[in-house]
Image (tube, rainbow, N blue to C red):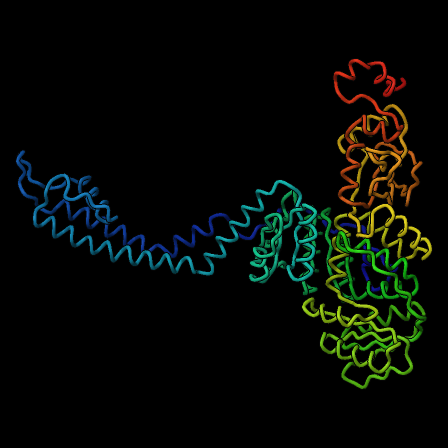
Length: 582
């Protein structure tokens, strides 16, 4: 979990500011669009009603030709309404119920033209209504609200759909998790339709500083399991943290921050994680220099699924730093470097840059163009200097990839990786945080074991609980006899082979066992944090749900699987699973 403040020893406060239960407001009532229609279409509707009334009443008053049966030929109210209906709608069955008189025909002609004028005016007002911004916003809000209210599985609200929000949404969507997006810009929400996500992602256009907008996005629904605030506006992110803390105090909230003041303010509301990329980059930079194998393992575990293990980069000894920056980033990174014993000088990128007496340079200006130009100058004049470059926009990443500096600071990528790690597998994130302080030889040994077991592609992280519903076969086994952890990681086809999954942590109440041994005995209620491939987890499911597969993985012996064969070998089955001792 990211540190909540620039001071690394500060902790998130555990006390809750939530005092009273308050209903979470929703922005748009269901009848808003109807009210807009009634207000905008009132005059056209009254005009059509008036035309119909005049036409029907006038037609009943028009004299008709005498009929053979002795009647006057006048139309009654129903007959007049029927003639008006088939005439005004252009259906037209002729003169019914009998031939009309000249007066009746003139009246029909007159209300035909009146109806044409009325319908033309009504259709024109309808066209204006469909293009009315308030009406379209109301219809969209109601449709989104209806969609969100029908979600019957856990979902996460992502506030801010820029590069970070899109990256997080794609990562969660790839894992089969539902997402709802809230953004102030309409074009960002409309981009959801072209992002080719696997599942439907409702998008709400609204200001997240308004609690009603979060309510419209589903904050009040029990299936809302987390909120991630990653907008570029720190005030918005802080307001989201405040809203969730007061209205849904037990809901996990992950927020992005860059300034120390905002980070301190967020910490008072105790979110799940505060990600300060400026603060975190110093950790990663120092880790890359001092413990390169640990740095490689951490970045590999946090990378997208299937990302190849990069080669380790051993950098020369660095003691003096030159930070070229024109914003708060320079002060943040310089403080981190000085805290670790380095000499760091901050200079303005607009001034003269002299690199003769330094070992490393960080091009950390607000402008990507300025940073790339500074990096090119440093590489040209001092090619042996360690060079780190800050990048703001993902659009310029190909240029930086081609330039290939020693280190790249791209805050959106760092925020997205940490947000996903904190949300999906918070236990894994705590394991990664401990790796930052691990011995480099231990990190290299763990990397070797993971690559041998899982391959060179970055693995998938997941959790497993030993329960009656989550692992029924294991729970039944533990009711009769002990079981070692290693049995769950053996191939169901050949137990001498290991599946592509590796246990990183075993949590048993307050006790946390890191990198547990295969001989570790399991207990009901244990939580296992592991990494692996989708194929490896599919192989593992056999041991979790099928008694005979688990028996083979644990003992190396086969037992009957079909009902008939079990009946024929009843004694053997009973021997395999003896009743629990009283």
